[in-house]
Image (cartoon, rainbow over all chains, first blue to last red; front, side, top):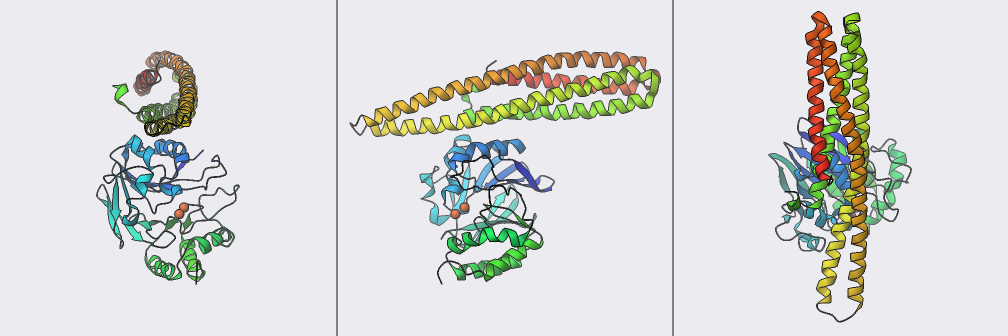
Length: 244
Length: 193
Ligand SMILES: [Fe+2]
Ligand SMILES: [Fe+2]
C-alpha cells in the first residue's frame, strides 16, 4: 500500500512524499506524488493515474483531510501524471489545476474544464499556497514540450517531474538514493530516450545548479538528497540525450 | 445531511473519526504509562492505582487495534467508491451514445456496468458490516474503559496526600473515554449502524 512519508516540516509548512507502491499492477509505471501543505491548505503534484487514485487518495487522507487539497500542479500532460483529475474533481469540484498553457485544452479529456485548468505561461509563474509562493520553473522539452518543475525556496525542495526519474527494480523500494553510482544506472536509459533536447537539458542544468536544492524529487524512483543533487545535475549535463 | 455528501467525502469523514480515536488511544497509552510511573513513585498507597493503570494501557492497545482494522477496511471502501464513480460515469456515457445509435451492443455494455455496480454495492455493504463488528467490539471496550475510569477515581481517593495527582489522571482518562464514545457514535452512524 502507498504511504505518505514526511520529507520536510517547519510548523504548518510540510512536504510529504506518497512513495512507491509495491501493490500496484505490474503494467502500470510506479509514481511518486508529493503533498505540500502550508497554513491549512495543500497542493498535490502530479496526482497520478486513474487506476492508482484509491491508493493515492487513501495515503493523502492518512496525513491531511484531502479537502485541504485545493490545487494540483501537473508538470505535464501524461496519463501517469494527471489522468486521475476527474476523480479528484469528483471529491472537490472547486479544485484548480496548474499546467502549461499548451495542455490547457488537452487535459480536459481526463476531466475538468476552463475553470479547473489554470495556464502557466512559458516562462513560469508563482503559485500561491495560502501566502507561500511556490515557483513553477520551465523545463520544456524535458520531456514534454510544455513542462514545468516546482521549486519551494523555503524547503529547498525541487519537484522535478520526469527529470531524475529511475526505473528501479521491484525489490528496490528505498525513498532516497543511497548509492548514486548504482542508482543512476536505472536512470540512464530513461533520460537518453525520453529527454528530447540537449540544449534544453544544458539550459535546465545551468539554472538548477544555481538553485539551493536540498532534495530533488522526481515523479519516478528515489529522491536525491544533499550532495547527490549536484551529482545528478552534473551527470545529466554530461549525458547525451535524444537526437543530436 | 449525509445524503448531500459525496461518497468519497463520507469515507473521508469516517477516516477523520478513526484518526481522532487513534490519537486518543495513543494519548491514553501515554496517560497509562505516566500513571504506572506515578503509582510506583507513590508506593504502597497507590498500589491499586498501579494495577488499574496497566488495565488502562491494555484498553488503549485494544482500541488502537480495532481502529487499525477499521482503517484498513476504509482503504477498501475508497477503492470500492472510486470504482463505483468510474462505472457510473461509463454508464452515463454509454447511455448518451445509446440515444444516437441503434446497435444493441450499447445497451448490453450498459447492462454489464449495472451488474458490476450491483457487485460493488454488495462489497460496500460487506465492508460496512465488517466495520460495524469492530465498532461494536470497540464500544464494549469503551464501556469497560468507563468502569476502569471509575475504579481509578476510587483508587485515587485512597491514595491520601498524593490523591489529587491521581484524580487528575483518572479524570483525564474518563474524558478520553467520553471523546472516544462520541466518535464511535459518529462512526456507527456513518457505517449505517
Ligand atoms: Fe511523462
Ligand atoms: Fe512520468
